[in-house]
Image (cartoon, rainbow, N blue to C red; front, side, top):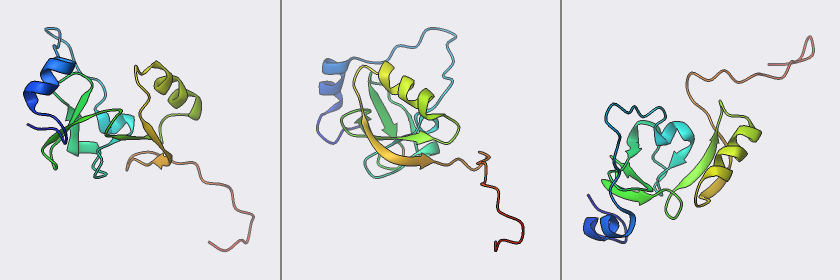
Length: 119
């Protein structure tokens, strides 16, 4: 594993290694929360790194700090208020980009068209 700026040993020394409690279950993967690596990979390409505060990109084969290196975009299933609350609870604010990350199974409500309007 590697980081764009640090070796594994440097990351471990500065941030520590993630320790999961026995029997713990990860509910949301980084891509589901709206994270993207610097090269815009998301969804199944990202997972939580073995290092605290870091994400692992399978495509880049790198560990990225969630706030210093990655971008965050609001997922379609989350309201603006929920997204703001999530971001406010983070220890360090990541780089937030505009727009909405659409998931294939998300139903996006469509505006009603007037009768006879072109599709």
